[in-house]
Amino acid sequence: MNNELNAYLAAGQVSLSNALFSGFAASDLTQHELIVYLFLTQWASQHDEAPALDTFAQSMKLAKNETYNVIASLIKKGAVQLVSRQDEAGRAVDQYDVTPLLAKLLTAPTVQPANIQALNAGQQIFNEIEVEFGRPLSPIEQQTIGDWLNVDHYEPAVISLALREAVLNQAYSLRYMDRILINWERRHLTTAAQVQADLKRQKNGL
Image (cartoon, rainbow, N blue to C red; front, top):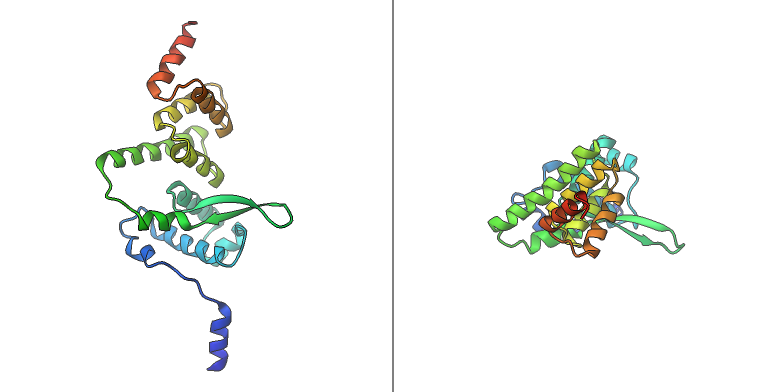
């Protein structure tokens, strides 16, 4: 009995908020996403950097590509965030921050129709870019698009226009799109109507 108790204590424990369980039904997470989120939470409590995808997938009995897609979806939904920092040796180290989901669950307001429309427009941007690029977006790319929407506050319609310009120039790169968005912002073109008017003037040589 003592050996079993010692083994239990040596294994360590992970503290989980009840909000994860009480708020799950009302969230947009799938069961697979919740499982991966819980494993990421356990990993982050014991490690200072992101897990190797192969071994992490094996620990959940999931395929590597399925694990990759689920993590990308968690980032897209704002449940986790990929953050970079420097370790004691000065190396750049990536880690998954699992606190965004808790913040959303604990402060979730009543969703108004206008907010639902904005969320749908943001989700559509992710889908449009994946379709045009012809591949799933990486977690870092998911984070970049999320920052455009939530940090830079670019309108989804403006991002869509930047995507169109990138495709027309056969530049399937978020870095290229970012340069377009920054250029428009510097020129105070912040709405889709302003951007379209400017593009029309350029096309007509005005």
